Every structure is written in C-alpha cells, then in structure tokens.
Length: 219
Image (cartoon, rainbow, N blue to C red; front, side, top):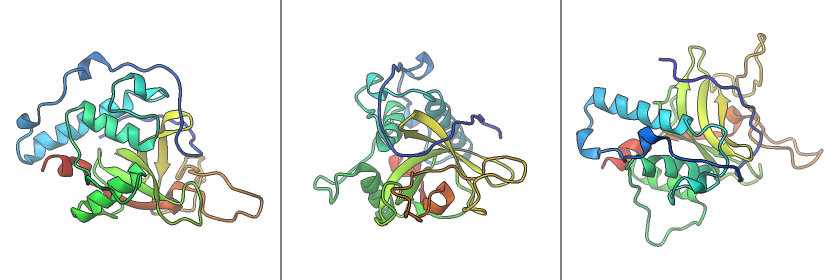
C-alpha cells in the first residue's frame, strides 16, 4: 500500500520553530476500546491512522504549539503523535537516563518489543545510534515507519533541525546514498564532526533496531 512519498533530505538531529495546529479529524483522541485486543484488520487501520497523523505534521517545526504532549525533538515528535491519538507510555519512575529516545528503546527492549528484520510494520518506531557522535554507540535518534517500497527502501517520519521530515533507509544497501537511477536509498543522518571524521553517516549504517510501540501501548 502506498502511503505518501515526500523527498526532504535530512542531515542531523532535533531542533525548533514554526506554527502547528492539530487537524480537526485528529482532535478527538482514539478510543482504545474499539481496537480490541489485537484483531489484525483493526490494528492495521490503527497503524494507518498513526502514520496519517504523523505525516500530517510534515514540515512543521514548532510542535509544542499543538499540545502539551509534543516537544521539538525526535522523541517528542514520536511521543506526541501516540499520546495525541490516545496511547499512553509507561516509563520508570526513576529512569536510568534523561535521554528520552534512549529511555524509549530501553523500555521496549525490556518488554520484548524490539526487532531487527528488514521489513518493519508501519507505525513501528525505528532507533538509530551514533547520530550525534560516532564514538558514542548509544541510541540517539528515533522516528516512525511510514512505508516500505518494493525495493526495500523504508520511509521514516522523524523530527530534525528542519522540523518533521521524511528519512529514507535501505537495510539491504546501508552504505548507498543514491542508486544508479538517482533514487535515495539512505539519507545522511549526521554531519562530519571534522575533516578527519571517517565515521558512518547514512541512515542504514546508523540503524539500531525497530520497536513495536503500538503493541506496548495496548498492553
């Protein structure tokens, strides 16, 4: 199923500004009781709803003006999308880190909701490591899977210095930026720190894992 194809190159992590409002079709929070406990057809519809709402924010920078769930960074975007649609996340009362993308990864990992297969479900989250400093091998960025092309290129909605953008990633060719036809396989996800910085730069190279955040929220 084709969801939405936008080309917006992305280079670094998470910042701010501009105006945003919640589209009227999403003003009412989702009724979790109507989803049931994992009927396949209904859960697919829920995943489409999550992706549609996340995509409706493309180009927006000042997410904090939408409501109190959003923050102007990568994890604030992901959490804001799910919370606005009525899905709660349970975090430890005494977390081991204040970095929310890393904390979200830890919570999903402990619950068994992390996986690394090349074909993710839409609305699942995707984690990346080393996006700020290649010497630090910790989760530092997160986005939402919106679609998977036939060639295996995954489109990911994420918040960067340009606001909400689309990130491309192909795990079969993680070191390839463009194919022979000029199609993006993997976007640049970080800048070089210096001329001697020979660390990984592309999304496929910095990929960590996927996480089924919806299933965790429905517990």
